[in-house]
Length: 355
Image (cartoon, rainbow, N blue to C red; front, side, top):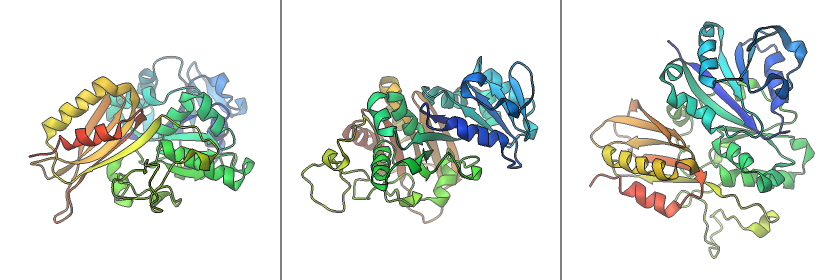
């Protein structure tokens, strides 16, 4: 049975999620989506879109359906699966103050849901005008960016080019790996945000081989430089013009987020038992701070590439296609989280190597 792709839509209050949701439910896009929302009235979906309704399922006039999550997400998704043969995808909208982590974890926790639906991507809508303030007063706004595979940088018409550059820099400081799309009133082709396979590392790496490394120019914006250790340079005394520096005075006293991203590489094969023990310890002791992590591992004694994905304490691994003959075998691991100790992560990952 093919797994149905699931997109998690998140974003702070007022960012534009309702506008995007109404577009998905009303546009004649020729596809059928099930949209799960937290509270039907709260989200503000246009009542004219509702064709017929029972307690939890709302039929839309373009073939989509809308569900309200008044109870357990797993139960609602399981109910949807019974009519899933007609869906192109499922979209889950979180409230503006919600941490998308628990929603993403659903697809790690419940084997029945995981066998029939797969997490396709996490899309975060960001208000370009108000994000600087949100980052100062809301940890939820930071975490929504940190979890994202795709970021809709919305309301770009309300800010200057200079302000937009500062906002994008703030986003990149938190999450260097998300794809950023500039929008006004959430006008974006839906195939740019739905059915992307952004949670599928194998698919991403086919198109963007450097995705897990430090080169992040794949979004057609210049967001960083690869300068040896695959991360932003934090040496305030460094004058190398090729390094990317985060000097507060250059960015109007920009909020210094406690959420950052770290990219690790290893040229030696990884000992599976050592890696499992290290990650087990990390998840036990720092799970709440590990918002997202993903990687491709070269496991000693195996020709299979191994992908790992994690959200907080939940992690899953899967075998991908074998390493190509003659190709350089290298493990790459990315962490996005709060209060990450980059040196400790590097040293810990090194201890997982064979030999």
